[in-house]
Image (cartoon, rainbow, N blue to C red; front, side):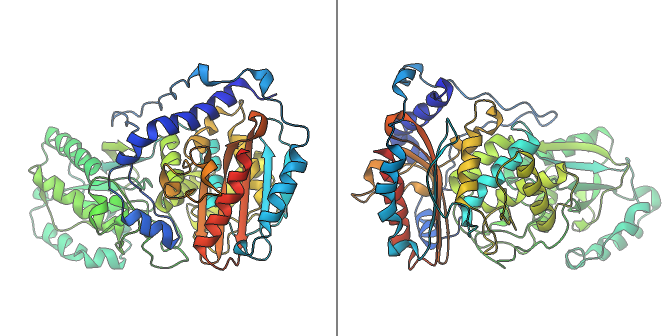
Length: 508
């Protein structure tokens, strides 16, 4: 029998989505960095303001994430009414079977439908066949991150200094990469060498912690706190360094330079966006900087100068000294909020950040390879069916990713487990059909309209790959988890309509 809390969560999410959507959609613009052309076109046409607000903590000490507000108890039907029809599996086979044979879904699509309360698979077709998941892989990213890090974890970006007049000894750590040379690192050092020893500027280092949501507003606050701390020490001139050593391996995603994702670095401002989408919030694909870390350091140095500090030359990439003192710190929103934002708007930059945070927690390299190992190990430890899974990235942009529809429904069912409340943002972050995120413009056809407002699901699309995985209240009031994966689909628009139709049938 379905737990009342699970029903309340589902009913509350769906009904509140319907009631509030008219006002919320007008304000909720996409942060979407998703893959498909249709999503890009949709995102470009929307406003740039953000979605649900999750207030951050005090920069000195991260506060726990606030608990979710209670759902409306009166919306929950009597528990005795939640019995599934005995013929539900047979009915699903009769209904979904023919739809799954649509040529719009390619030659051999995969499907899984699970009763969340019991874990019973009610319908399955090639459910154990690994296929390219595209952006639905973010469900695995979310479960792994929440499980490993906890929903209250926040990602810090810090400013440190070795001492009040740090100089000299740590300069040998300079990696001498192209970025440092381009920013005039040698010129900045020679300027400092020309000064009297006692007049050398204090070296400070902006240390990237892997926060993909760091923006100019928070950098401004970080600069204010840093300037105040330096003035308290009697420091008025600094040499700015920046440290991105937390991440290792290739910075560029295997997809190559792409408007959907910035180079993956431990430090960035506005996700490296070069258009207006980085001003207040992030929205849609956009041209990206080739050096997000260096650009963020430039912005930080400018903000320090605005606050009356002198800087000795441009920022230089250099690892922070081990004995450095912390001057200031800014924290991201909780992982619970990052997961919701990633899922609602298919944010690839957040996805790659979260899998690297998972790798760091596991003591593995914060790289594409290390993240793959960490996520798969975390899911295996949770006794999820990871056989055949290949998670080459956290975003789903990698065409070599493989996942099964059975694993996707298992992940969703685990997120609804009353004993795993820390995973609930996986469900609350899913877009609402016809109302929010990457599903805002879908479920408009006559054969899918019944799913509008009733389905929450993560989309995924690459060329020839279309997927959809989420939850719906089905016959008898049962919460169902579903996943549909299609490869070699002839066209994205027709494939999306076919997936919408499939999932909408689960509501009746």
